[in-house]
Image (cartoon, rainbow, N blue to C red; front, top):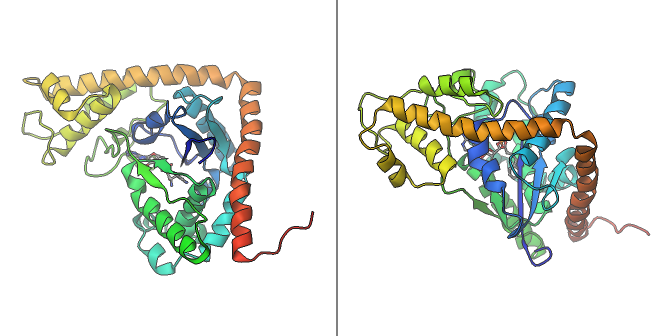
Length: 334
Ligand code: TYM
């Protein structure tokens, strides 16, 4: 707990183009939590290099992501927005936690299996150890809650396991974090294959809505969204395409699936697709306008980057020093 507030930590990779899944599953839920929690939102650029990156592109994407956090409505005065690579404690704690994590439990990580299948020419140790770095991110800040999409659940479970193991040896060092999901949108699926999640790395660009897509592109992608031949709008596992469209509608409008189904009673799939497309386009247009405004505010963004690296570093180093002392590293001489 910091300043009597519980601590919240989350992050996103600065890789690829952010999708509507990232927005509805995570980013949108991060807004307005600062009154209740002390919030840290990290641009996890160290995670990004588990897949080969072009240096100039990575640098640009990291900055764009930080600006997107603000454009989405996260107030940089009330929340700590920073780059993972500016706080060296992340990598240092990750090394320590590697020594408290078993190969067997890491072998079970489904995201590693998926990613190593996609990048068969570069199955590096970092990709394998990725969840340990994620555990370090969260535990460094003694986070109570971690708002993420459902695809990160397994990583959060291993974080809790590592923290409990460490605490059982050394006493109460780490806070055990809880996941935090939004009411809707925790798992947004591809518009072309509603049995798979919408993903930045999808090879079919029609499956994903990207946060920077213009209105025409958004409407075209929704028009082409895969549905079914039932011709009935229900919220059911048997109709994954329709269910996904309703999930998107619910997350954008803060309504329940029952309410959404009522709104579309007696209407056709075409109408549903257009309504969801309009809602999404409205949301994203506002975000894009704010993003383009921020692009011109170089000094303001630079100030946030500098100030928050120091602030995040201060909290992270407190935990790191405590961990180092517990495991027996020699005291620093002052
Ligand atoms: P990343 O960058 O893949 O995704 C960022 C956030 O977006 C969510 N998300 C989705 N939610 C709903 N539907 C989808 N289709 C969808 N796709 C992505 C993710 O669940 C995530 O919340 N390992 C993390 C980044 C990370 C992190 C952390 C997160 C590193 N350290 C510490 C929290 C705490 C990742 O790759 O997310």
